Amino acid sequence: MFILKRQDVEISSIQHPTRDQQVPILNYQGQTFRLISVFKASQEVEARALWRDLTDNRGKACVLLEEPERYSVWGKIRLDQLGNDTGSHSKTEILTLACLMVLQAVYMDIEDFLGTRQAALFEKDVGDVLLQKQFPQVSSLEVVKYLLTTNPSQIAKPPRWQETHVIILLQELHRIAKAYFGNANFAHELADKLEDLPEAERSLFIDWLNQSPLSKLWQ
Image (tube, rainbow, N blue to C red; front, side, top):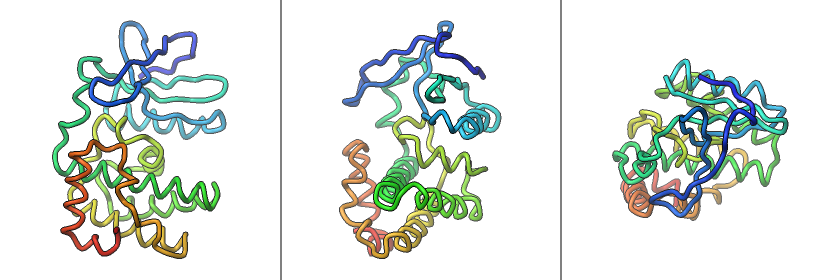
C-alpha cells in the first residue's frame, strides 16, 4: 500500500484496552496502523517481501516504513477495533495462535543457545514442513519468517488452519527441535511458552493438548 519514510509519519503508543501492554501506533494521513514486524537494516529484501505478500496476496492494507537503522511493516487498524483482537477467537484460532507461540519459543531457544546459523537452518526446516504439507496461507518462506518472528498477538488474523494442521506442526516441531537440541527438554514446561496468551485461551489449548496424542510429546 505505502512505502514511507520516518518523517512522513507520526509514531506513538497507546495502552491496549484488554491487555497489560503498550501498542505501537503509526499515523499517516488520518489512518492508523499497528506494528506487525521489525527487520534489521540488512533485511530490506525480507521486509519488502513480507510487505508485498501481505498487500498483494493477503489483501492487507500495510505500510512499509524505511528508517536508516531498520525496516518495519505496519497493518491498518481502527483504534475502536483494538480491543477485539483478544478474547474473540474461535477454538481453531486459539489452537493456531498457541501453536505459533510454541513454535516461536523453540525458535528463540535455538537462536539463543545454538546461534543464528542454526536458527536459520531451523527456519528452513520448519518452512519445508509448512510448504510441503501445503498449510493454508503459507505460500512462501517469507510468510514462514513472518510467522516465526511476529508476536502472535499482533497478527490481525491467524492463518486459517484446522486442528489437523496444528497437530501435524506440533509433531514435526518436536521431531525437528529434538534433532537440534539432542533431547526433548525443550518440550517441558509448556505453559511458560504461552505466557502471552490470555488465561482462558491458554487453558483451552492445554486441555486440548492433554486429551490428544501430543500429550506424550509436550509435557
